[in-house]
Image (tube, rainbow, N blue to C red; front, side, top):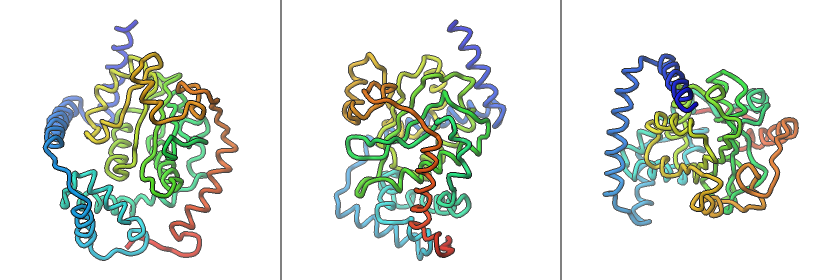
Length: 311
């Protein structure tokens, strides 16, 4: 059975490669990713922490380097935002500036803050990604993902749905919190329900480059062995900072249980993740809540009364 599944996995990965470009070119890219991954990890060990005063100075330097901003770009580029981009690039000013300027350009074209629930609601009918009705121990927003409930084959639809929920989760973070937690339930997951590698790569790129330092933890709960083989390919698209936040969690593993206990209260945690609560996704009720949140999103970005665009 394992050999059959591995054959299916390799066939599937090959299909994913052909969707994007030839397998040899992907393997070459992965090889390069592996080298850069190793180099980045080695550099991170040599990185020296800078004190608060130096960090504040870096934030000011980055703001000066960005030049005049207005509209939504100005609102997006808060001091906390600049710190996240600097942190993501180990406080290297030039790299953080390049990264942030690319995000500003992306947001100007993609306009994630303009996505409304009714545009992506069909992607969420099965509850494959939803905002939890509880928070983690630090009061942070929790996103629940159930890839076994994948219901569409649209790469762009899947991406827009996730981007919408990322924006929504961020606006629902309590004051002083910059990060959220992800819980991924693999119940019902199979290669047939998994997104193609190209889509996974695109999602990882958007999350790492346009939502840096937004993840506190990603708990992959009880993933099947076949996923671990798939992960061996996908992980090369994940940078070191993100990689360290991804935890493989197994129900009968003591260390895994300690990880979950440190981030979540068992009374709030659904039984699918080893807790005592019940998880039931109600699409109609969730849609009602998202529609209310859309009103707050429009107010936050000034879209309820004027065209406050990017400049």
